[in-house]
Length: 563
Image 1 (cartoon, helix red, strand yellow):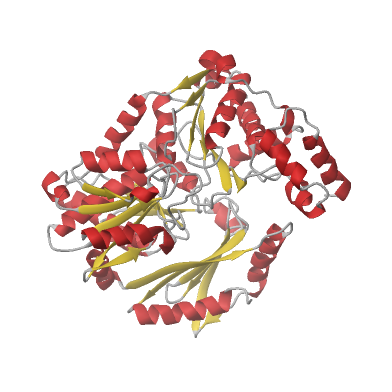
Image 2 (image 1 turned 60 degrees about the horizontal axis):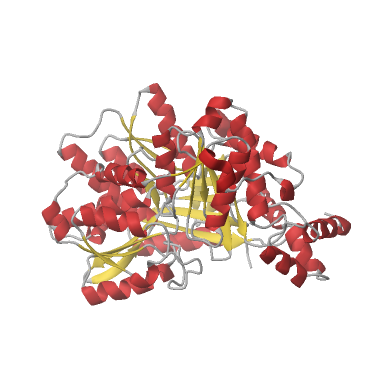
């Protein structure tokens, strides 16, 4: 954008009489600083197929009450286009513990109300999976979750859901984006206060919480309270939304739960944790210390919006962190083996995972006669598969997961569910403990049966105004110049998800590449949908850990950008 344009937008905001006081102070503090002004006003915050996520602050390229209201006005126009019935059914809105999340929730409800659309809100923070459940329970036309998941404290975000409680699909997201782009002045979006809205804004009561927790309890297979009482669990919600529902469900099921109290309060600054992301070892530091002190069996942690679960369990007496692929493999082995043994495996069982999820889960599913379908990354695609097979009445969903620590066991929710995962993982740990095994022991048994799997990834960040162009250039270069072999092992095939072939196979067009080698290892390259980064995924199967790490080193050197 030309200098005069971003300066014009800056002055437009600064001279707006109704501007939020805090945002005005921020704008005054950068007056005369062209670089800071350009960062905030050179563009508009991108609204992708999963919503938007970004830095909090003033400007058209930041998350603030005005960009939130603009996004909501676009979503409201999309819902209104479906007619009066959709408006009457309304939208459910939830939020996490982040800065301004409550204010954004009330503003979102107010914009819907101004558009004549019913809005349901909670009396406080609730997890993403409960938002999905509430949309389904109320028969609402859609949903909004105010969250930036595991991002640092200076971020917030906005995710949108359809009537199934599933994140909006690509086609419908594009319709919402089109409506958003029609709004030229984000400062003048109509918004009603709760008092002005009257019956158009309803605060949900405890019955939604109660029914959600009841449905979570229903996923239990063994329901062995004696075994549960012998399992000692350390849990951290990372200052987020899981604190109440996870502790409630586990306690009601009979588990001894030791909370990491320094990480339980809904603190927007995340002051008690070095990192709220279950994928980061720093998230477990305090919990691991408590686990050693209390001689706990497992440590579990959910991310701030409680859609993802991380776990650590013991091997030879020492706590070991498990990846999302590893914990999912153990869950698959437990769920499928117990359902089979009890004669409760449904006919035509189906597992859904993504193209960057470990193949280990596929091997376990194959053993138990569970068919596997793949999707692009993003749980909305798994949700679409669930809805498709529900409509066709041809397959029965039994599990879905991504490598990034997210899974869904029962489809009364249509997004990944950290509360369900917490209960089922504790149940698996209690069951195996009754046989003298830990979750890591079970994982080692799985490796002995299927081979050692090393599943890992690397992230490359591309910040600045031309970050997206750099990412596109990187994937374009790999399309032309990718290696045909690494360490003497040939590339068997390349899956290009921008190609007509992959679209004919049922995948939406996406800038993703997957290189499958003759030894069944693979490398996938995918730009992030929410952050300015490109991800490299590796799935390596070898005879043992040393062989897998050697293979990984060769693939990493061959594919990743050089510093």
